[in-house]
Amino acid sequence: MKLLIANIKELLQVRDKSIEILCGKDMGILPTIKNAYILIVNDRIVKYGPMSECHNIETDKTIDATGKLVLPTWCDSHSHIVYAGNREQEFVDRINGLSYEEIANRGGGILNSAKILGNTSENDLFEQSIKRVNQVIKMGTGALEIKSGYGLSLESELKMLRVIRKIKDSVPIKIKATFLGAHALPKKFKNDKKGYLQHIVSDMLPVVKEEGLADYIDAFCEKGYFSLEDTEQIMVAGKNYELIPKIHVNQFNAFGGVALAVKYGALSVDHLEELNDEDIEALKGSKTMPVALPSCSYFLSIPYTPARKIIDAGLPLALATDYNPGSTPSGNMNFVVSTACIKMKMTPEEAINAATINGAYAMGCSTDYGSISIGKKANIIITKEVPSYNYLPYAFGENHIDKVIINGIVM
Image (tube, rainbow, N blue to C red):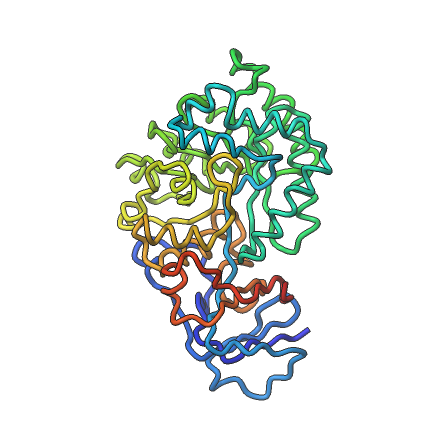
């Protein structure tokens, strides 16, 4: 199948040499071609360039993109999209003045989701979750990381991971799975954190490895959840089972989690709403990607990740949704990009780079995703007619997407 997209107003994120990661000032550079075309054969990008060079190309189908932009699909490297039910009452509780911590302390939050999920069949959980995944594909997401963590027991964590695997087999986009058993302490282990950590290490991880259910391992390194010592135990155990760390850090407190994650070769450190100079220094020279989750800050009314501090220090930054029922019930990467520009003072170029190339790096799929490059997967967004790419984050309430192409097929 040969697909030609012609008369593109502007083709964004064009990289002749496939780049894995963008840092500092390079994040402000977004290569484009105006009045362009792109040729797709089966599921791969095989050619692109200005329309003046588009001669005698035989195709099975041609899409006229006059007045429209074309860019790679979003790479969402942090989501909890597999969950049961919702937590809308907690939304109202926060409006009435309760904090995230107060809600958690009275049995809400993660434990609430774990209770609902425990009473939900694997098939029902899949049906609820696949609807969300299909929705985010329509909103332009072409690669998605999904975490467990609402199980908090061997049976329920495996249920989540098996649902993630079933989703991976059911949708055309790239799916990466992360085991997040250390998300919170279940009621059964309320006064025995050591026992729960041992349960993760001795009982959960061997099965996760045996069934090949995860690519990464994660922990919620935060006061009231898992300490530096706890997180280190999880990272060491995960690496023994060939799982690379991707760690939740600095959502509410900064106390050394970033440096610890870097020490153990974490692929990413996610949240970073609180960040100090020591964290910045720890990230310099590392291969660990900082990941910001601006929708979470928006929904919880907590500080935003200091993007300018990170980028101006010469570091990279990725953007992701954190799609989950409690703190970010949205998988809309378009809103994430807009919010990063509006609230975190990222330029449109920086935000698009963070949501494509750097997002792909943060979920370990840079080889095939994140840019318009020959040989990469043909996962592409075609916008509606817009004035420029600056308009995408500017008009944050509009749906700018005309078509989403996944593996060369119009969805």
